[in-house]
Length: 317
Image (cartoon, rainbow, N blue to C red; front, side, top):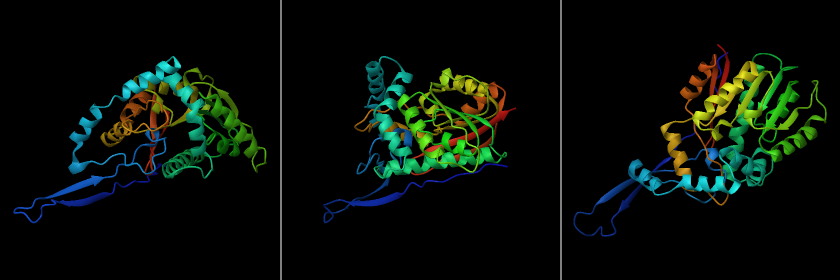
């Protein structure tokens, strides 16, 4: 069965007519300016953005925007982050999701009302990704007794529903804080009882590189955003080696439009620190899968105003 799930966001174009204040003088000149309010990718707008206009492009001036971006130095900001924690991308990610990032994303992934408009929209997008993953998996039949590796489990948004469906779940995350929260949520939600036989997920603190074992299915949602393409190829190969039948990946898609939004987002880092974010083209992901003998069987795109995610299911070719 082909998988299709697209929720398209629209970019409102508001035309404003600006008239010269000296309209009574000869040859008054009118200028029409088209402005576009650009929604930003969830990975780049984790901070509160209420009341802030992040990007206004006048007259379609992409060149002007590029010039503005060139005056900033987001890479310098990233280097300083890495120096503070004494390492590279991985150390920055671990530090972030064990501290301020954990507090922020626990709210987004949870049910609290203490979220702003952007965070609520991101919550919606992420939940739709989880729902689509569950649909993909259940399309092939019951998950009773099926072993699933949830690589980068966060607070257990996918691991817990999988366990409720009877799957045997191994879930890991680089953040000890996230794993502790996932375990807490699993105990609260799964020990209440279920119609199906429930095996409590096994949660561990682990980065993707350290994962081992063999599973019927491996799922990795919204984690590749922390890997440049050069490392993502190896990570995709590693995840495929852990799976016997299916590999599901979601990632922030790389297109001209999304890449521009990413760069605009870097101009407004917000009050809290964030991690470096990498976009990946579907073609690059598909190429990495083909190199290790896998092919994409199902594809989907989940988008809300502030959340964009490409979802693919791969199987051995």
